[in-house]
Length: 600
Image (tube, rainbow, N blue to C red):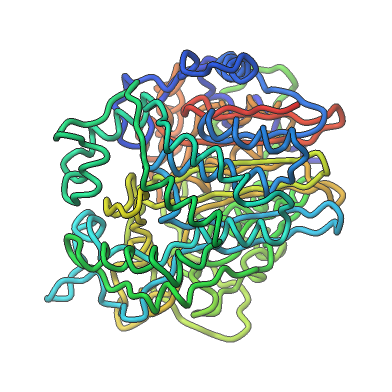
């Protein structure tokens, strides 16, 4: 009988010492993300110290894990007062949009999973941005038909899609919230009016991106007052953001999509560097969409995520499904076995490449192109793909498979890139509801266009810059009203139909690897903080990215001996998780970023 590999011999073999810090996004490697000194609340400070020591936090009733202590505090206050997970999400996300504006906010979009304990059902909401109705597949090509340079496309109005985050926040609240919106937005409004302390991470990222931030006047005035980048420890006020949230508290999202905020967004996009095509008509017609979750059975659990236009749910499901089908036999318990370690890493690298090959060919907005989700996650298909993987050597070439389609189609492969700036929060409330939200403005600081106190996204650059290849259309090409493919992978793992783990991460297309390896570790017996703190090894397109750490050189050499190209690098995950255990709730936050988990 084949055994699933022990946790200690899969990916955790790369584990950093507890509390080791890594660079995030464009942040210089020497910068620390330890913000313990900035946390006044003793209980929250204790959570920060637990994370630094590599320990989970535990609670009996409710738990929140998010990317900034101020956001956790806002959500915790709501949960303590009897609010639902949806209520806490609104409060926390509103604060995140203020204190880490480089990652998410009202000008972006996201995907949300919600487990309704009363109904015993899992729901998913798509708050992804949409392309303007005037956009064409040639949006990011020059006059000769060649793709634009990435940052030529990103900076300015051309890359801005219709924001979905405000509609997603309000839509989730309408379905599952109980507290008044004004009460939930109050903490963010107060922080915006009174000012918040600039974190080390935000200060470093502003300094690193100052030239691009200076290209839009309102953005420059906020982040570069008098031409000087804001820095760690500065008190930063944002009256524009406070006014925007106040209007939303009073009138909901109507002003955002069909009123004065919409008018200002359009003016900013059309008046920006490299003007965009966004119109008031585009905003007026935006809606969030409820979609079916995608689930795959893995080790007696159901791993559930977001379906298209996200590729995250399908790709995570494929990786874990193939791992479960092909995992090598583990060495004896307690054995230090380098062969077992590298076997597991070789297998993970190969199945990840197979999943990314399918992702590049088939995943796109299913409202525009048929996507074979059932075929891609069919157990027989995954077993057949797993047989191609092997755990002895790197595959020399990887190709998309041929999953069952509802009807035959031929697609070319995506061409483009994604640089991450995203956030994630996980919540379980006292009623047993669970929420997983990943939201983003795409690149750090998005399009660099700011309006009414928030940055606008550059999510349209998640489309393929190439529309065709050899006369064959690309599934993820730009089309009017279409939603770009995303790697965001908010995940809820179910056991006997109830939440066992709520998890997700930022990180561009590496999100898929971060989430898959963390879920795999947890399902194989890791304590949740250990599962997300362990160093990463991610293979998307052939090269194995190995996270810098004590054993990185050794593991890199072992993988090279198996035929992998490797690169040792700092990897910028921001995993936030809540595990539901027999003894209560366990929360964990990624040591690579400034967030914490807290519960009572």
